[in-house]
Length: 441
Image 1 (cartoon, rainbow, N blue to C red):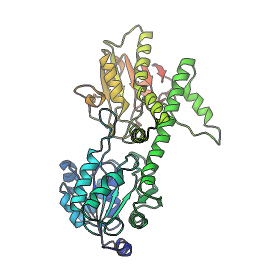
Image 2 (cartoon, one colour):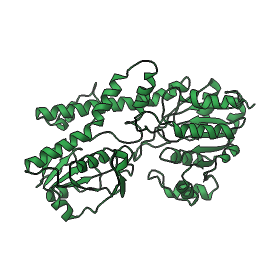
Image 3 (cartoon, one colour):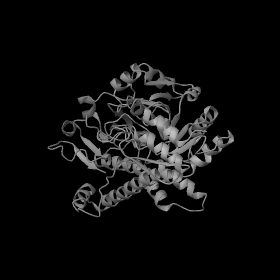
């Protein structure tokens, strides 16, 4: 048995070691921040390429500078391994593995379950276990708790168990791990106290909630709020399109109200590791309570169908030029799910490219951050390579479709050289004068 006071003393003295399981967009930044605070950090990932990269002092996450990784590795504060046995050497472990949706759009908990099995196998007295992977309320208590109890551990006495939702926003220049407030909830009050103390060493603001389910619910509320409001504004875009009204002008005017309104913007669909997925975890969970989460499912339906709306706009725009999609040369700009990042997870661009190809379009794409895409993620086959964005390619395209509004694109030049542009991000609004005919979402 280890007391809360003993654990807190080890936190204060920086004499405990920490492991971060899952070295992706969430795990590596967290591992780096803990290591910067003087803790010895061992990252664990089943992807040997990530492990080798960390140990070679190289960052593969744009938000984490290579020089930071190199300094920490050189100083003996950061290392990585594929072997879960390293958990025997640490006092705290944060689990940051993916929680995607399966083919039937149900939660895929395989990564969490696999990690929980390994953590329970190597767990020892005095360890703090924190789940950070976004999931449905009850996961910590239903997956991690019984595995620890099966090993004979008393939670809050022998080991500490907590949930803390990750809040990483890839590519955000203003908010990272350290200055984004962190929420923590433990299985017992002592569990909450120790996770609060540990995270407060590396994160400026740490907020306690009562229990693991409350902490799990916080992240789902945050992203359901965004998904539903994006679904609302996407429907507004559809309505404005039918009325012949410019939705972007409407939003700009509405946001002039200093109270009671928060602007959201339409687009070609939802992407990323959180907003398209997390609300469906909650919707799925509520089905076990015989409750239908109507807002979530309606918003998901609207957002999921936006790529089809984009393709319809392309078809209408080409039709005005007496051209069908079939046989037309279409250049898609942007494959990442949002601007200025190299993340293609759940990107609507994949669906747009696949749907245009299904209708016989000759489709190329260009993205300075995404050299290759797999169409299998959109239910298609094969892969595509990003093409060079040459003057000839722009001029020869029957239609250019802006799906991701990267800052690197020269929109004024694009407007001068392209014939037809379907703009799903309002990127061309300030590109004047222009030769191209621009069709908005």
